[in-house]
Structure formats: C-alpha cells, structure tokens
Length: 588
Image 1: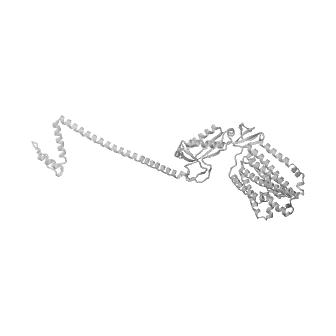
Image 2 (image 1 turned 90 degrees about the vertical axis):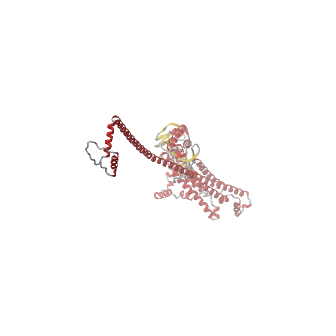
Image 3 (image 1 turned 60 degrees about the vertical axis):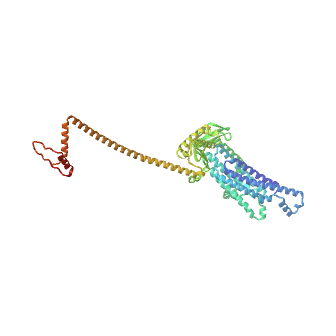
C-alpha cells in the first residue's frame, strides 16, 4: 500500500467521523442516539488516526527508498528498519488498544446514563426536523459506507471494514429513529423509550464485541498481530451486513426459478441509475411532509410563522402550514395533568419510617419563622390552560413553576410551627399553597392551571428523629394526662353537684319541718293563752279535767254518790299518779 492509498482510507474515515460528530451535537436530547453516535465517532477517529500514522510511515519509507540508502537494499534490512523507524506497529499493538479501553469506560457511563435518563419533551418543529435529519444522515452514512466498501475492495484491504460496517448499519438506525419520531408526530404513540433502549443494547453489544476481538488479538501469532488492522470492527455487524443475507438468498432463489439474473433486468438497472434521484425525491417528500400536522385529541396547536406564535390556537384535527422552517404548528397538551415534586426527587417505594429516608433527594424546609426544619413532600399537579401564553412566556415552564412553588411553600410554612403543620393545619397549608401558587403563576403569565396540591408526607429531618420522637412522646403523655384530668373532672363534678343538691334539699326540708312545728306550737300556745285570758276559771277547770282524763284513761273507776264530793288529798293524788306510771294500777 502506498501513502496516497493510506490517505484515501484516512479521508474516508474522517468523513464518517465528521458525520458522527454532527450527530453527537444534534442528539443531545436523546441519550441513546448520543451514545451510539459517540461510539461511531470513536471508531471512525481511531481508524482515521491509524491511517494517518500509516500514511506518514509509508511516506517516510518511500522517501528513504528514493534516497537510495544502503540500509534499504536487502529485504531483511528493510523490514528491520521499518520496525525501528515506523510508528504504526507501536500504535497497532499498544496505543489503539489503550484508546479502545478508555473509550469502553466512557461508553459504559454513557450507556448507563442513556438507560436511566428519560427522553426529553420535543416540540412539533423539533420532531419534524428530527425526521428530516434522521433520513438525511441515514442516507449520507449509507453512501459513505458503500464508498468505504468499494474503496476497500479497490485497494484490496479489510482495514476499513469497521468504519464501513458502522456507516452502513447507521442507515437502519436512522430509519428506525425516523419511524419512531413519525409515529409520535402523527399517531401520538411515543416509542422513543423502546427505540432508545433497543439502541442502547445494540451499542453495548457492539462495544463488547470490539473489546473481545481486541483482546483476542493477543492470542494470535506474532505475524498475524503485525498484519492486523485498526480496532473497532464488529463480528455482529459483519454477520448482519454480509452479502449472503436473506434478501440475497431470496434474489438467488428467484433467479434460479425464473432463469433470469435480476442484476441484468431493465428494472434493476433502472433502479440502480435512479438511486440518487429517488433519494433526493424521498428527502423532498420528507421536507414537504412537515407542512402537515395532526393535532390529537387533548392537545392544542399553535401556529409558528417566521419565528412568531400566531393566535388563536387550533383544535384537534389535520392542519396545514408552510413547510419547515418557514412555518410549523406547535403541539401543546392542554388536557394532560403533569406533576412536579417539592421536597424530594423520586419515590423509592420503600416503607415509610421516621428514622429512614422516605424518598431520594429529600430536602429540609424552614418552618416556624425559620427556627425549625421539616422534611415535606409536596406533589403539585398542573396542566396547560393557555397554550399561547405557555409557549411565549418561558422555554422551561416546569422549572419556573418549581421555583415559584418552592417560594410559596417557604412563605406558607414559615408562618406556622412544625407541630401545627404536621397535625391540624395540613389541609389549610395545602389550600393556601394552591391559592398562592396559582396567583404567582398568573402574575408571571405562564398559562398554567394548578389542579391539586397535596402534602404527601411531613416528618422531621432523619438526623434529629430520635430527639423529635422523645419530644412527641412527652407531648403525647402531657396531652394524655390533660385528657384524663378532663375526664375525671367531667365525671366528678356532676356527682359532687348531685350530692350537694341532695344535701341542700334535705336541709331545706328539715328546716321547713321544724319551722312549721315551731309555728304550730306557738300558735297553740297563743290560743291557750287567749282562752285563759278570756275565761280563767273555765280554762283551769278544762285543763284539770283534761289532765284527769289523760291520767285516768284505761283505769277502773268507782263512782260514789254522796251529798258532798269526796276530797282528794295530795297523798291520794300522788298515789294515783304513781300507779298510772306503771308499777301497778291504783284504786281509788
């Protein structure tokens, strides 16, 4: 191989590397495509560097040969001088393997990141541009891959196989990407995650394949190692792109059945000659397709003409505009409810315990005039209410809404203490936060509607949880004692009031009874006194007779008729009274 031929190989590899570099710049929002493009750029760059070193060595070798030095007269001396002065053997045996190892580490990080990271939201114009660029880049890389295959066959070298395989395979990757973007744009089915993860797995397989093939070189004989080319070629791609693929098998069987070689038919020759016009026509049709936009149900379309949003928004259905970049229709989901998270980043789904972190990325928020800290998880649900204001106000309404929500959350929680927020003021905090956030959103003209604000979880920082639990336990014990005292008071006071009423009623009844008795005795005494005053003799006789009647009641009496009434002495009267008191009956 001459230095000129090596430069041709270098130019082909450099062209592929430049295209992959452009893909890297254009695919920053799609991590899977970015990872695949970075791997293509690495492989193409290693090939370009390999062929550049080879061209320099061959140019030096050709100069030494033209100089007629005696060191180049014998074949053995020439081989020894080549090993001594040429840089390609050292690059082939060590440096490119080192570059491949470093690239594998970088690719591992990129692929892990691409697998975990979600695909960014895309506007209608960006989807249309992505379809056009995917088709254009796929066709360009396919042409470069075909050129690399033809160049390698012309120069009778397989050193360009790695670049040619990646370039030809990129045609299929570009077609898959264009198809997924078209389905998202016109059918509203997002297959980008499935397509991206499939591409991540394919890229990981290509990287692993290149590493294994590079390590297997160390087991080859020395002569085979010296004759090996640049690293980065893939056995998987060789099997996928081999000439004896199923389509070639079908073509061969048809030729055998029909007795006609398809390559000699006029249709095949016409298609071969019309390949370039067909490619250009496909690109033109893809560009004209950007004039048609389907606005799905639940979305609104905002026309963009010469970089300006045009009012009013259009509803669901087919709509036409000038092709991109002269005009486009931006799709805005007006019925979809999105969510932002305050106080944390992601829910891990683990059991919720105070002594352990509930979520990833928990944040502590000042409450109670900045004297206390709480970890508060607040999900905020919102939707797009005004599509035109949403597109005109900010390029990242979600981030703006999150900043406003944090500001309102701090304003609401700083006016309340931690116990109130965790207990009886949760609903009030939620309602106040929603009202204040909607007011702030309207003031900034974001075109959003706050649908719901909730307090999912509130707990103290994990570091102070044991002390906080002690405080909570003491507070609960204090509250328990207060409630027990209130229960005892509620039970004892009615009983005491009942007993006091009973005693008061008893005393009042006894007093009334004694008062009435005393009044009766006094009235009886006053009546007796009045009678005695009116008729003293009669009153005394009456009293005497009543006393005798009471004293002689129940006793035998003897009545003696005489002319003079008997005289009763004091001794007889005393005897009679003694007999009536109970020791015996007295006889008169």
